[in-house]
Structures are given as C-alpha cells and as structure tokens.
Length: 262
Image (cartoon, rainbow, N blue to C red; front, top):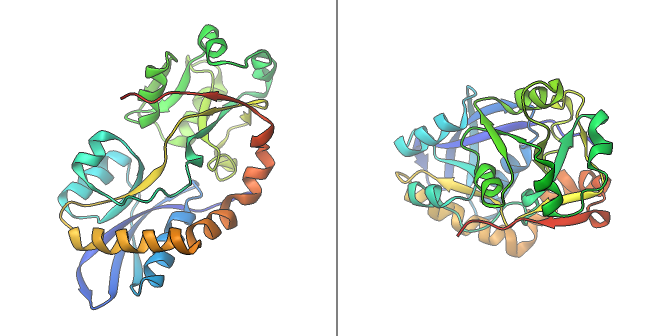
C-alpha cells in the first residue's frame, strides 16, 4: 500500500472565534503525513473545536522551528529532543505509539546480500557502513551515541535517497521509520527495505506548539488525551499505516535495540 500525502505544519492565525480555529498549513509533498493532519483536525473536533486549514508554501525544518519561535506558526510534529522541549510547548501524547522509532534500513538492491550476516548492533558497527541523514535530525544523536557512523547533509528526504542510490557519496543506507517507508515509495530512487532486521529505539513524534500560543497548547493537550483514551488516534493510525506495517513483517525481523543518550 502506498500513501501519498503532505507534510503539514499548522499555525494558529491571529484570530479565533469561540471554538473555531483557523490554522495555516505549510505543505511538503511526498512524505505521506496526512495522518498528522487528520489526527489534529479530528482530535480537535472531538473536543468541540472546529479547525479550518489554510495552506502556506513549503519550508525546511529549520525555518519551521524559527517560525514557531516567532509565533508565525502554531504547531508542528517533531521527534522529541531536549532542545525542542525547552524551546516549544510539547503536547504530552505521542503520535505513533513509538513506531517511528522502529527503523528500516533502505539500501541499494545490489547491497542486500552484504547485510545478510548482520544480526547485532556489534555487526553493524563492524561493517563501518555510514547512514545518510539530514542536518540536525534527532537520529544523528542516536547513531552517534550507539557508535554508528552517520553523515549529516543539508538535503531533502528525496535527495538523501538519491545520495545512497548513487553509491558515490560515502553513505551506504538510509534509516527510515517503519511508517515512512511506504509513504516515501516514489522518493526511494530504487532503494529497497533491507529484510531481516529492524533497529529500535524509544522515540515518537509529538506536537510542538509555539511558546507564544499557550491557549492552543491547552486545547491540543486536552484533545490529544481524549483521542488516545477514546481510541481515535489508534483507529486513524491503523487506517493510514496498518497495511504498510504488515507488509514489512516487523514481527519476523531480528530486533536490534539502540539506546538513547541521557
């Protein structure tokens, strides 16, 4: 199953009437993250808040964070980091049940056999294979903490796939969250999910709200708690990712656990 969607960044506009919110939306094509859009709108609706979306142009993560600080955008989902917890108002409910922390290695088809004997973290370390990552990603800290080499570059997800596929850029694989693999099908540049193993570390996406918008944070805190308790989040998650996760056969893979820095 393929999911095509937009990565959405939600910003609270200056005006809100009663229980209605007008939210700006920055789109980023090809990343299949309509789940977060629908979860946000549905959770708010169930808590009695009607959200209307308005699009704004695409932007890189660094720009998103800057605009959150400035209050020009209201909320976006990120992997949790101590720095983001300090800069923004985090909504406490995780968004993927931890599944974003189940990482699949995307590799060139010709390289699959080279990983056949890898079954432990020590095996992956000894291979000296380098992961491709974008600059500033939280994953890079995890890889470094576990003694795994990673090269950070100022590229988009699609460009990182192409870097690995080229075989000439000093990177050998691209680790992607289990829920991202199918969504990024058209970006893969021929890379395939490495069978047999899955790297796991404790992590999740969270909604982070601009520090200038505590009222929005309060609304989302309540809405997401109710969505978890009612099963709404789990229902939407299965709707968007259930089939794709089944196709990865995660329960049949050897689990390699990574630790997080303190």
